Amino acid sequence: MAELLTSTGVENHAVVSPAEWLASRKELLQKEKEFTRLRDELSAQRRQLPWVKVDKNYVFDSPAGKQSLSDLFEGRNQLIIYHFMFGPDWEAGCPSCSFLADHFNSFIVHLNARDISMSVVSKAPIAQLQAFEKRMRWSFNWVSSYNNSFNRDFHVSFTKEEMATGKVYYNYGLMEFPSEEAPGLSVFYKNDAGEIFHTYSTYTRGLDILLGAYNFIDMTPKGRDEDALAFPMAWVRHHDRYSHSSAAKANETRKAGCCAEEHRP
Image (cartoon, rainbow, N blue to C red):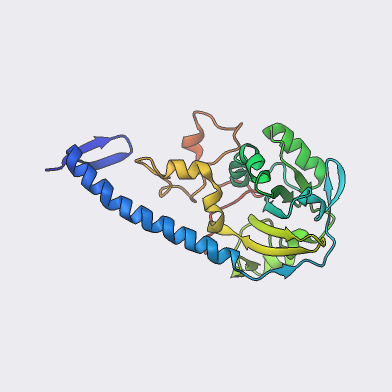
């Protein structure tokens, strides 16, 4: 017979014997294994997508000067670019993108070992990116697309005219979006002849799997615990802006220039 346990934030949860817990855990394990197999199948289908040749010669502003899209490969064949929300007139980068970017430095070295380079691209001028990167104590390659059409071509920056219509082209369709900048991730391949191909891009909840901290949070009893918030990531702050009052303020609407809500497909 299950006993009920009441604790802070987790009300009336069943408490059972070790044997009953094990039976339930094994039942869930079968579903976890099914999910793993389906994820592997989906990843294989992703790799089978056709490619599009990139004919534009994109040149970015970087701390080292001008860098072309080809330069960002750093001698490797594969390149991942994270589209970081940071508009030219913003004071800081998006907190939600920053939450994700906090993961980057620790794993890029492992990507490099698998013939993969990674860069972050934002619309803000390079001086703004460098100042914020210094504040956040990041050291990944972050370049500016302020002087090229990269953000527009990959549908993560929108004009005032587009915003005025109420819908923009994002995540492969027209949708409402509260900001002129949007998050995303794009993947490229460069062959031995130097030709560059766009192989994949993902947006909105497609980025969710990149948030390692969320994967840990999802395993806890309270999970993401975001149902009562104004939007799912309302609690997220820049990592140097958390305080004891952060939780109390989590329901506040962020000011313009940040992710205003999560956008589901």
